[in-house]
Image (cartoon, rainbow, N blue to C red; front, side):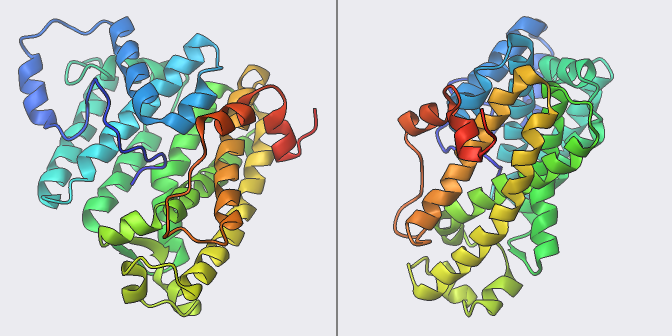
Length: 318
């Protein structure tokens, strides 16, 4: 479960493939140009990251392409590790994807068409590869773990699959104040918790519980009740508890926006506003995430991204 969940597959499908088979096939194929590699990353982002793409599309082209490269790599890592039918195979494929990333940074990006763009982005914006390795480790948690006992455990999962992406993203956006790194971490926690709450029913149907079991107990919700995925008063109380905690992390996102370079603020501000609005939509529905999946229309996203609307939503002034 990655921090942006859109089930529709891209036309340039990088999901559910064997990186080992792909590597063998590409030995006889022409080398992917950097321009073509970025184009594939953009195509994946357009198709599978609806919320992100609304925000990223207003960036200057080099930053936009860099963000798309990070997203495409992250999306692929998540797809590889999220194969519930064969977790051991998923972990083996993830190990191969990690090795392909390291080879790309060392100069051999032939294992997959998106890797030239990924390596170029990592180098251009001086992003520590450790963050991408943390991300891969986070996606591997989906192949190994279906329950999280404490908030610290859920936090670590959110950090690995969302916060590290936020930290890499602000390197592309540009920043000088070191406080931005911690704020990006907290913003990633907010985004991922919003996704966890929005997808609570879907994950329960897949026998996955990302919320801390200690929270279920404190709110009087049994695992069986949550897995039944019914709209009950106890589950609504649980969701309300998690919404209130997540709001605190969104405050960090509001404080992050002014710290990044001016030409990137509209993109980040729009993204924080869109995800923050999703969380508030859950509250408006009396914390019922079981009856239907909470979402925003394309018009709502566009409105939040347009002009000064995101600043008004985030109460950042004009």
